[in-house]
Length: 386
Ligand code: NZQ
Ligand code: ZN
Image (cartoon, rainbow, N blue to C red; front, side, top):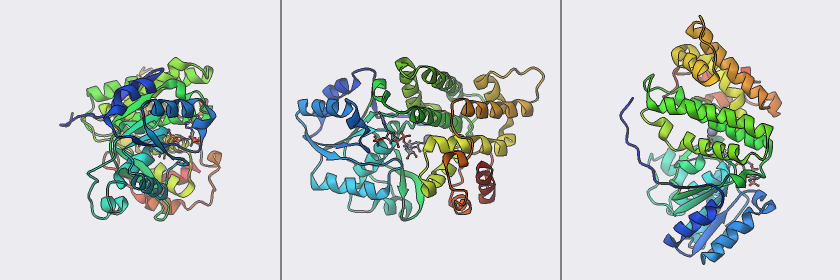
């Protein structure tokens, strides 16, 4: 295992009624003005909005509403939120939603504390923001684990880039599985697949063959697979939803990444696909990941063989590592079909004339991938996904 430093700043409130417990314990630490940020309005169709507003009022907070954060949040929306925070001297940001709302607020929080443009600061000047407005996250759609880390995935439409922008950690996160009960099955499954994807991207990264992080990771992957099946057979299975919510947190709270250099090449490809097509994140990964793995598994054959045996339960018998590795990737593909995720871009209604070359050429090549891909290979992979 590589050397590491691990510290963790986000307090987790998990389970039924977690929002009240969190707000009672946390909100008195911050000033009166709270920006309540949410997405396109799903929280207003359920009891979540009223519940959160009542809890904030009971805590004596003045609410400044910031709504309309879209899936795949844009940099323009970040700037709109930051202006609102500054104009109203907001003391605390409460993000209520899925990964998009949670990510957007991370960068709003930093942008509101500086006159510099955060994008320019990070990508042109190579500096990271140093001050932020404190924040809490109430997760209504799990899978991304965005409430667990300081990175936010933001789409800069002007530059045609969807990428990770460094923000801040949340001070606390509310994980109440009941808040996910109104999600469509499509979103539950694509979110949960995102968790599985994060686990795989971490597992196949570099950093030693046998370590505790990978042992824990196998347990999280098996748990995620089992609970996706459980939710699909009983939509209201709150235990399974809770397991998926915590697995999502485990995927991104850094525990599985300890001592490793993570891969995340599939994510880099999917993010650029998203920049050009605004596609659903989990669905994009479901199409890309098996195709990518067929291109790279020979460079990490023992790990892919171990994945087949330990995660998918494939019998070793007299199979070679290569046969096992291929069987593991097939098991992943079969699972993707079983849970109704797409296996091609056409199933995602992505236009076949999408400029895949530009997407490939603008995709980041990651350090942790077992095979250092070229942009030409990424183009081949994207074409195979059509
Ligand atoms: O906007 P509203 O009306 O709330 O509707 C949302 C949205 O349409 C809806 N939704 C959320 N909670 C709901 C609900 N509908 C009914 N009931 C509820 N309880 O779900 C739709 C999708 O929401 P979104 O937040 O976009 O989904 P997700 O959580 O999958 O987040 C995706 C974003 O996170 C980024 C992705 O790239 C994408 O931009 N990621 C962030 C990561 C991070 N920061 O660590 C890691 C991930 O790899 C990922 O890249
Ligand atoms: Zn993801």
